[in-house]
Image (cartoon, rainbow, N blue to C red; front, side, top):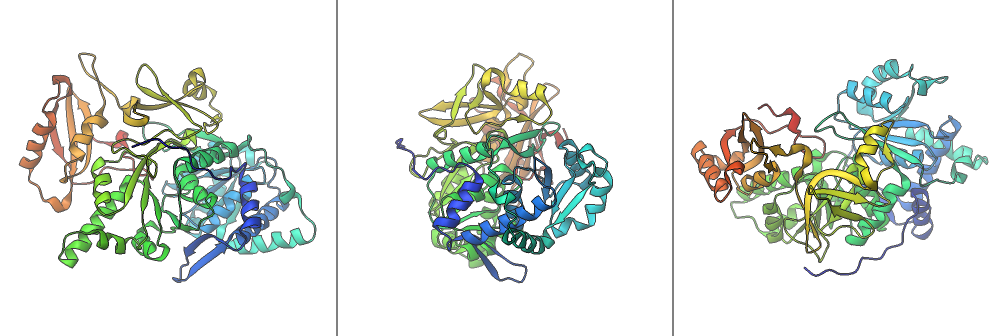
Length: 520
């Protein structure tokens, strides 16, 4: 496709400026909407969102939340989650978004590592709060005050109290000037290959990335992001970027209800990970089976709300077969690439400039290059401040002033292609480097393969395959697939054995397979 100029949108400076500007220029426009527990749909205007954030922020200021206090946020996606995040970081405090799927003991450990003795939590986590209090009340960050809990179920009360304080002249919170370069959030990496590290991000980091991404992709209509808000792709792309476009953002509170939510939200753009795409395809096949007819664009249009034009996909590798499949449905599936340390997006296929199999052009305003070893390096305002209390890891990651992503790739005709991970590289006995991801893609293109992982054991390459259950393919089918995949490959890249799995691989919250948990 042909390159073209970036899309132009007003450039936000920080979240407070973005929030205030939207409330002043489009006060009655819908900022966010979502389905309540009783099935009713609640719409929140730009003015109401600003007032709720300022109300909660003022309440927190009155409780001593100022001067860079660290506070965890845990719970499924919700309007309250977003209000808490904005209220914390716009008051000069530091948010620790936590993965709600993690065991409680892991969350406690991460909070302690992040010097965090305060927690915003959803009702689902109320039973675990005593454990948080018992373990975190003695850490240095809790000195003098102990562990402080902030249940989201009490937010209406907190916001109302904050608004009373504002009316009485307590304007310290709303008058606070944001330092966009100061630490605003600590996000712990998923730890798919090792111990999680605390990625330090400023408002300038993720606001810059939001501005950059908005130049590559233009969005109109309703945006819907079912990805978890604790992950930067879910937060920055799925919610903040939609908000920045001055378009309504639908909050998916429970991903299990996503098919029903599509009918309610009627999005024009969906932000997803490959795991969601795979789920959609399975759902579509069920619909076709029930209808007794082949899948058609009209069938998919009805199932997705009637207005879906684009799906932005990231977070994990995406097989090109899905890109081609969705195009036949009349939906352009635009693959992208990012990493938490880069706030997170580095590249994405554009509305009218895309290349199947690639992750698209590098964002305008980002710098990306490939080093001599094939590793993707990045530089720009979106790159993290460093790893929290880990200068050695920071120095290692930022060698030469470039962030070393750990991903392998290439740039061809202005498109970035991901070819693997440096930590996943297999070094053969003859000293050859093998990227398992490149071999895995050969298997994943087959419709009978749901998941595939290639690894080395005792000097041989092995592939574990979780078959597509509806395919009902016999073992001989996969032996033949193995033979086809090995055609044309040099000896050192030939996969010697296929192992069929009865269960899917373990994945993290964004759908990446956790390779270290694979039994070999």
